[in-house]
Image 1 (tube, rainbow, N blue to C red):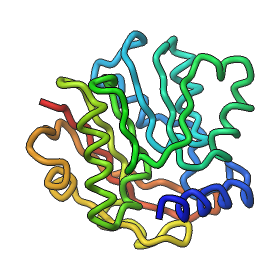
Image 2 (image 1 turned 90 degrees about the vertical axis):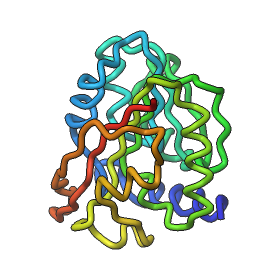
Image 3 (image 1 turned 60 degrees about the horizontal axis):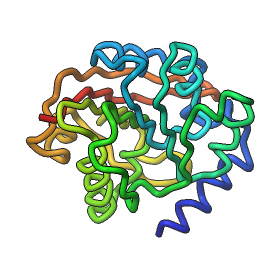
Image 4 (image 1 turned 90 degrees about the horizontal axis):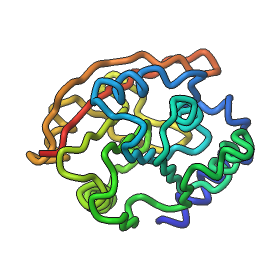
Length: 206
């Protein structure tokens, strides 16, 4: 399954420019706002799950963040960001990895950011693997930002089925160790002009 996922996402980035994929954002405004709301600063460690070619890492570097990790199953997606950053790419840790099989260093991140990865995990085994990585990698008192398709969002994306969520459903999946601090719905307009409803949630790990 992991190899199939890797092949699928590498092909997506090989066939489409990074600014034409449906999840592209010209500015990661909501991510930055929630990171600020969590009180995360430049000395805190952040991991961006499925960061791929996202501009979030650029904006965090612009703001002086020094401990950044970007993980994505698609090497092609990470390559886009690395080329775009040029010499600044050396200031980021890049991992080509399936998060459902990842064993991060224990309690190493103050903030876990996931925009548009978790909703692709439609099998319980994959969600459990993801939770193991989250539980291990996020330190106690740390924050997790999830942006997944809302109940009014699409049923498929990039040719794959997705699991849509309410805030209560996402809270139930993560469990009582994660306290929901904020949730909001955002209508994302894709480069092709379509719309997708995203649920944004901010959790604190108690």
